[in-house]
Amino acid sequence: MSSNNPFDQFDIEHLSASSINLYMQDIPLFIVRYLAKHKSPTNSAMLRGTVIDHAIGEKHSVKEAQKEFMSLMNYHKKEGVTFDEVKAETEYKNIEKYLEVGLPFYEELGEPVSYQKKVELEFDDLPIPVIGYVDLEYENCIRDIKTTARKPSELLPQVQRQIAIYATALEKDRAYADYLYVTKTKAEVITLEVDDIDMRLNEVYRVASAMMNLLQNNDIYSLVDQFYPNPDWMWSLSDIEFAKDLWRIK
Image 1 (cartoon, rainbow, N blue to C red):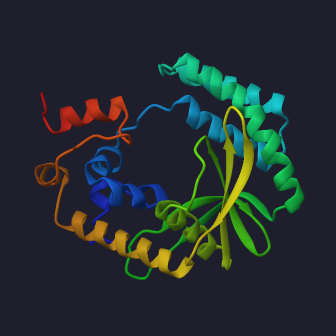
Image 2: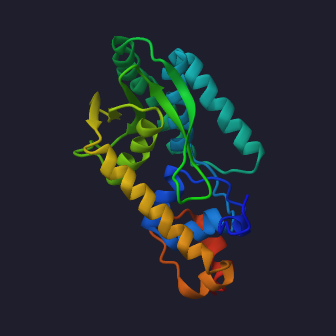
């Protein structure tokens, strides 16, 4: 790798939709997670999302998915992660609801070309690639599985950028996010399509370039001097405590 690569000093070998979107949304949190390498503990909702992805992609039964959920919970508990047991119980029960609506939906679409395929996208002016993993690839499109308790009315820009990367890497003209929407009284799949893949990819390139330019002239200490954290819903308690130490906040 070139010595002129500004990502080198932060041991960043690739970008992702998550790092690009976080840079856009909250630079101090980007500093915490991607430059200072702080890893925030997982939670039961994140584990449930992982389990649903696996169950749909690998055609697991509800019982198999629930077993995987409990196995992941126990693994992380042994690693010192503390879970909200009430929320964890709700997520465990909701696995059945998500799969009851999700499995028939994808079965009707037919067999995908690939599941969780790693993709790598390179831009001429960037020294490192953008890497991601595509939930489901079909002959004419890619599809990303989302689970939610809030009904989506539109496809958020950050999700559009994420799946535009996947579609471009696999040379697909169509990219969809399938929201498995589950509440106490309702369960349905809501499909939303990326509005303009080229436009969203251009956003990815411009943000990645802005990130590169910022890192070119700064180390983590000068960045801490330039930005100050203002924690919101995206920050975990672990992120906040780490940031207090990094920014020397009492």
